[in-house]
Image (cartoon, rainbow, N blue to C red):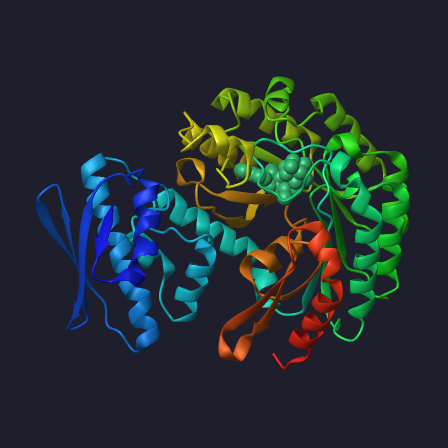
Length: 457
Ligand SMILES: C[S@@+](CC[C@H](N)C(=O)[O-])C[C@H]1O[C@@H](n2cnc3c(N)ncnc32)[C@H](O)[C@@H]1O
Ligand code: SF4
């Protein structure tokens, strides 16, 4: 239980308390500010410790930012001293460490100083520096729009996934009406699409949709007459691939396809409810390669029962296929996932070693890290990171993660983001997650988006 004299700091502090798995303990927190000093007094187990964070402050926005930072740091240092544990990103709990690093750089400071002060490990300070270096050409060209189309259908639900999808067996009845709404949404975008960097059809599992439906979506995109650009389909699960869907994708200008193994162990795939085999992944990969697509591969470190050597086998297999991109996710515990029903907190033996192995092997194989993000309940406090062969990065991933371009997103559970660059803010527009509700509200979604993107940014 946490008692604080400053309620608006509680959510920030709780992120740190949860990281250490210490929600059941009692803390009393007293915060005050005095002569550019942020002071956090914490009473725990009958003892009071006082933490000072000295920081000159220009305005109210900075005051809030530094107050939050100081409180997180104070709790991190206290809990580190009590438990002896430390985490790879220290007291940084946000999902985008690179965004914070950019912000520091733009304000004329070296991000490494702040990261060091927040106890980020030296390896991760270097790692964030590497990501920023790979992103440099993309960041320099920031602006434009990314077009996202959400197809929230999956063959079955994987145990770790919180995605709103239900198995296609129970959502099939909505597919036709859903595609009609996506067609209407896409047609409505004509007046607001002006400078599209990339198109991304995401899931769910877009290849869960049969050829006829898929072609309707591709045709609706084609009708927008966009100039050629990176065009990705997160086809996804290998058990949904066939030549006809790939042929269609090629015909409509798709350039990149995701073939996602998650693991190459059939035992693991069974355990996580993927309902496909490693052999099906090889087949799907070979088919997609035949058509000359760039290929993205997703792996997850920390899956049920996997050891570092098991993960290493999957990673080596992925590397041997030589895809343009390999994204290594660290297992995270998500509300709404089956895994959450049986697991309160993830304690994955060897997770740090898995991430270390991924960095070593991918680097040796000529991949560079190019986009990264973190999630709240991620095993060991690690990250998800996309690695690409030089020049083969998926630009959409960078645009979205760094929020350096507008995102125009259609379909259920899609979140459009309009950047107001001069005001330093982002406005979001989220569509309903539930498919029938999305279908019912399609007209309103269309008019709201036209209003948002009609404004000067
Ligand atoms: C939105 S999912 C869509 C991918 C596609 N449906 C598939 O499963 O092949 C994108 C990726 O997020 C990752 N992912 C989803 N849930 C995760 C979790 N709880 N922990 C770690 N990674 C996760 C998986 O690697 C997955 O491929
Ligand atoms: S991981 Fe992919 S296939 Fe599995 S439930 Fe989530 S979105 Fe669907």
